Image (cartoon, rainbow, N blue to C red; front, side):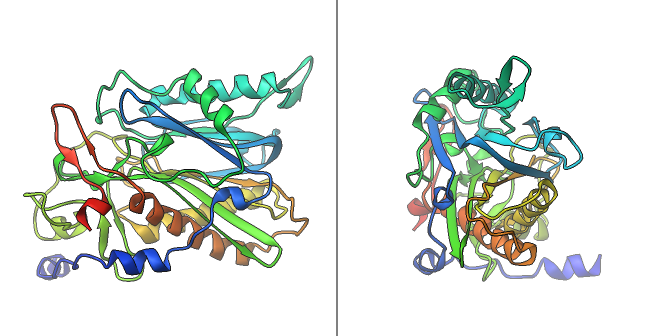
Length: 351
């Protein structure tokens, strides 16, 4: 107790130098990984949507779920002890559990193109999926469905995907433990790096209860604002000063993402690399993996480099790339006003 009391006297970190953060944040995109495509669908009726990471020929897949309120589909198949060893796409979507329908659209698109796991007279596309909660941003009756997922697949390409308030990140917000009136805008971010012959990329939709922080200084980049909404104070700093949070319902947030590499991995190694991706979340989101978040990271290994994966090196790189993608998600986001509710500013609007 004494350590907690003394901590309440700590100073709130100053606003970060955004130019410096932008300058040192890794660039690139998950589509730099050979064999990976990305497509967004952003709903024009309210801020929501879905994002597909396409590997239609089938690649090794893994997943790691750390949040306590996940919404997922087909994740059990990725257990290394289970039969199916290839993934044809991963769907990330807003809309809470309703958004899982978006994966059905991807399954239909892939079936029409002849992709999938051989199963008797047909092929069954394997499309694991995870969702985030954005139903509090606009009309909750508008959420991604199978048609939205199909459109995301139609839009998929190897071009660097748009970032910020698009696709699965269109309605994403961060720093909302004290309510949306004190939150800031989240979004989708991506990053990649090539080391030797191997490329590692990440794409993430950031919709955390917690704050996005600068991993170097701990300063809040986007997150909980002061009661008057004028400064970024941070969730943890608010709690340490004695401002107890209200009782949110589980599943009101969630950060979901995909790591991809052209290294050759087994299913077990892909699962392990997905675990390393959560290290990147922990470096840039505070707090992470809460009872209100369903944080989930997938890993896709195309093997197209022909190089057997060095798990020590890949793990270190994966955490760095995922952390960079989180930062880019909020740097590229755009503010939004909820009809009849508060305006949710972006990092850019704070300067």
